[in-house]
Amino acid sequence: MVQHVAATIRRHQMLAPGDRVAVAVSGGADSVCLLHVLLELAPDWNLALSVVHLNHQLRGDASDADAAFVRDLACRLNLPCTIREAGLSLAGGNLEQAARHARLALFREVLSSGAATRVATGHTRSDQAETVLYRFLRGSGTAGLSAIRPVTSDGLIRPLLDVPRDEIEQFLRDRGIAWCEDATNASLRFARNRIRHGLLPQIEREANPAIGSVLAHTALWAQAEEDYWNQELDRLSGGVLESQNGFVSLNARGLAALPLAAARRLVRRAIGQAKGDLRAIDFQHVESLLELARPHGGHGHVHLPGLRAVRSFDWLRFETFPSVESPRPYSLHPSVPGTARVPAAGLDISLELIEKSETSGTVDSVYNTRMGCLDWQRLSGSLLLRNWRPGDRYQPQGCTGEQKIKTLFQKARVPSWERRQWPVLLDGSSIIWVRRFGAAARVAADSASRVILRIRVAEA
Image (cartoon, rainbow, N blue to C red; front, side, top):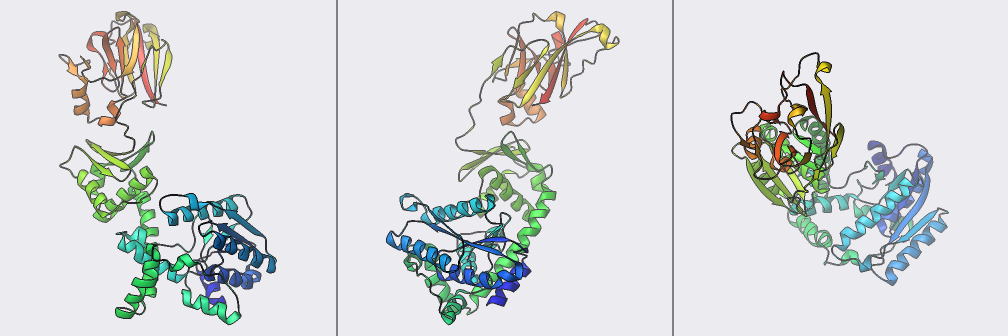
């Protein structure tokens, strides 16, 4: 057992010489075994061990008894011990999930405080098999099937991950080491226990006696696949997956051009970034988003758990609830010269006055995405900068008549969500400039202009 665990530690590079390892001990067989094995291995890596325990307070006196058992065990082994209480008996919803989050919060606190460089948990190969099967039955893809990682980026290690539970209990019995039995581990009210005590034994009897190993190996395959795809997606996401102004967006054309396997994974990455997790996201959700991105599309939306994806022209944007449909209108009188900050649009709009002599006799009155030039002497000077409103229209320079700005948006394929905060400049009640579409024809600067109002747009 001890050498088996040592090989696992070396294979996955779980420890470095001199590491301070906090061992998460619940009092159960797995964590007690882990503590004793690491005690024997500590000289090999010059480890400094400590014990950490979270009393979930879900079983009354029994939970307190487990905490007391762990405290006494640490004392007998002359190890520092940290015990915290979570008070989850008052928590609603999924208690298993709440307990897991509470444990992780404690582990991260121990790591961030510098008390430990690693936290070791007692997850076994049996836990791995149960997790893989549980996630498969829920419809997880390979990301979910990768299940329990031997080492995590935040410092958790699982040295017992290659050891089945029955070998652990035999190890403890052979050495006369006591542990606590958690009665909730036998309760069939929890889905994981139904898999552990019912489904997996049935599969072992009737289909494959080595199902535990098969499922654990499936996790290893999936982990390697995920590691590869995560690096590949970093390369593929350029120009396809964007995150700006707090929103995550996918380019529909770029997504549709990817191989299906890559497109599915990029959709999942986008959902994860927008939502914070992939909980309750299933295969059909991903497929519906890919359908929304197909070339025949242009507009539409898909509702996901806690999220909505909206397509406008070539982009799909993810919006969390509550909906952000309602625009936040703004209206301000800019100083000339000066810079008007428009936080809602994420833009800075500068207005400068330029004498004709400063331009060496020429004026670049052709508008581009960052600049526009107006004849200052044709303006009243009562300027108003506001967001676009439905029905707005004006005659851009080079056009023969007035145009609805909405029509200009459509021709320029401006996504619907960008229009909400699109800046429009008015002189009195007349629109004289619109971002990207430039100056109104009647006030655009030309060769006869003596004083020029130059407008520049920059991202804030």
